[in-house]
Length: 188
Image (cartoon, rainbow, N blue to C red; front, side, top):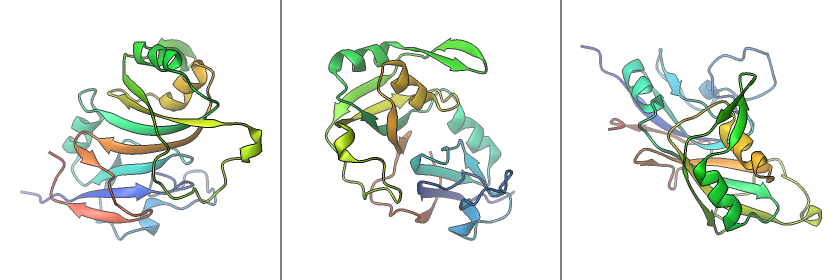
């Protein structure tokens, strides 16, 4: 019987959620943060510009279960402009986004306005304050199409400036420091 290992990682902005750099970009890879065992895989991905909780495992079955549409993923999102409750309600009911060259209506989700969360400033400045106000919201999904949260906020007129995943199922980012990896006994 194989013994599997599971990890949580606070992915920094500008890191590729892979162990191999397919495009030879000058970005950090997962293996630069920790000496992961062979056959470790990221469960789902966060794009290069996204931050936060990334789960890794050596167990493909666990990866498949977490990526299923049964497990919630929660994101804190900073958007350009002052998003209103009316816009939040539109997001909650589903919006039309592009996916693989076709129109797709997102499933209903949870969403709410939130106060500015207590995260360190990103390593790359987002933009100058003189360019107008920003606001923060929480979005919780069970699906995860390519760049879905960014497409959803843009669909209601508020481009995403910063995206931080804070929860996958019952697993929380909590006080894990930026770039820190922690081995955990399992995810369920």
